[in-house]
Image (cartoon, rainbow, N blue to C red; front, side):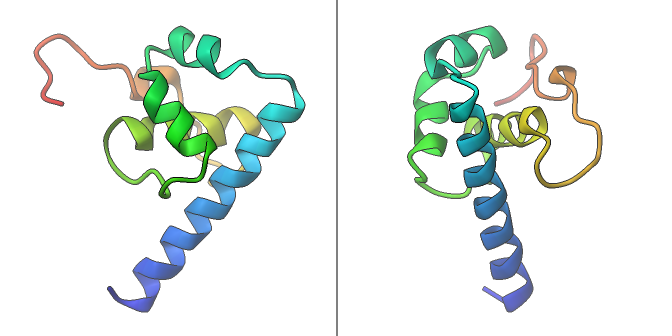
Length: 91
């Protein structure tokens, strides 16, 4: 893995950890948060526990939504529609 990829992964992991901390300070209930966004609870819990940077699949969706909601990281506007699965869409 080259240095640029490693640096980006570490940055995403740090941004996600910061977002989790912000949302926890707000008193977020992770079960309700996951259910409201149509995410599997295990993906949200994995991100909260720091198991990986959340680069693929449901973990990536959860991490991106956490960063977006907490206002951390990239400043590109991310909406829930970007992460909702459409009927017939591959996982």
